[in-house]
Image (cartoon, rainbow, N blue to C red):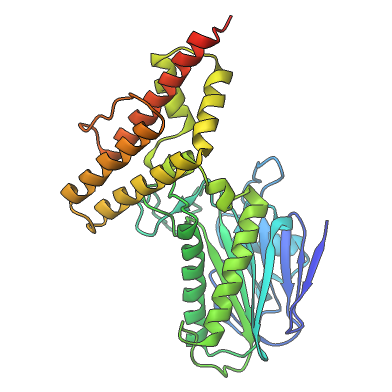
Length: 365
């Protein structure tokens, strides 16, 4: 399927499953993080976002020995001149790209965003494993948030750079508001490991300010947030409803359905179906989601030095006690474990209790 979007500038975005191409209707100033056509350019005619993966999630091998060569090959496949375009790369289905336009009088900003953050979300400063050497390609995990940001007024280079910063902050704010955990640490994510951005405006350099005190930055941030939220939902189902989950809150601490299942079934044998139904019920229970949300927020406050160990310990114990009282549970709360380990053990204990009671009342054949 092909989807087309016309921006107030006359530029046109065409999205298919494999590519999203913005064709410029006139001279443009373009600030890009792309390997192809990256940096500040005034001679480009288009910008593209290219997907290397099919619907099954299997990505094609890289064309060439560097990302620039790969993107140049992609440009040729798309019928574009690689010397006068800039490109971004993604594993997302680009039919899921989302567009938002925000206006104030004659001023406008638009964002076109593709994204997935479920398997490659990271926090700036997370431990890294790669070091580039001699331009050789590095293997990267799929999962990228790519942003095309277009503005109506012409912007000076410094103002375009400010807008790129604002766009990155808007993306980070969305992920943190929706409690997306990092896949590389126990921190909340600020993006993914492979995010890209292209800022596009008319050539001429009229506005010299793009910071958050200025209306153009407000419009840009609102457009990025709205487009990113829709793109993430279209690609992976990521939204406040999907995040209303105990497991979503705990995944960044290494607590997953698999780890809980291994611990519970080693203590209390049960069928896979019975375990799954019990975990799913607890995972979406409103009281448990709220209590665990408060518990992990305490962990974050403790890790950041905003609470002392003594202050946090009082509330860890209080929340655990409220959970046990609410569910009339006698599961152990082991204070010898780290805080994340304690809530994991508590949840496993509650599930084991429930499985034993189910086995007593409804024995499995």
